[in-house]
Length: 116
Image (tube, rainbow, N blue to C red; front, side):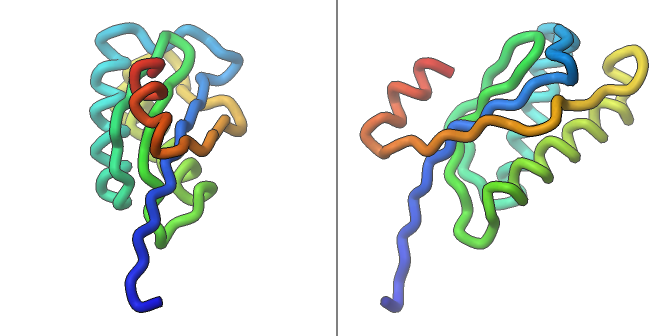
């Protein structure tokens, strides 16, 4: 096949270490903007991103040249670095080990977007 059209929607979820409520409203807004920019640089089409004080949800298209593990490792690593560089919390910030990812069918994208 000479042309490909992959559309793999992913609902990703990752939390702060020990699920500490470190992502206060003002910090969380800046962090989500930063995550969106970084994901878009990787070629991920971010549909929406939101979160709570202890975790982040993001709905995005997985680019065909990157694995899911590469995207999540990069997003978590870069955003953790950004949080520490900008001294947004006292002490060292880090994400919980691991993440949750769920494939989303095209027909369910709007429903997941509303949930997030």
